[in-house]
Image (cartoon, rainbow, N blue to C red; front, side):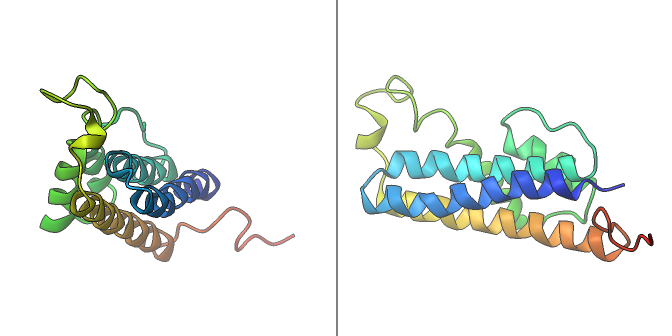
Length: 148
């Protein structure tokens, strides 16, 4: 049985995190926007894994995507590339010593933040399409189709 409640809980956080990237971009918090893009995708992929009752641990998007693709069709090249790009935005945007010199906020650009957000949107759409396909092949929400 599919756990739609848990899926929605994780997916709502993923979407809110994606939405909040805009505020970081407006206030030139580009490094943080990049990290949030990673986080949004991590939450979305974990939502899908929770939906089908699979373990959802770790922060490696490429691995989480591979595990998620066992549930649905293989993601296209764009989705895989985006997961790989965002994997590189997990540690460097957050830690002052992750780059050779300077702090992360000095290195990330508006273009990188926008691209990270676009990538996050791409992967999240794949997750939503996957979940929708599972629903269409019989995974009803709790309470649907039951008679009293």
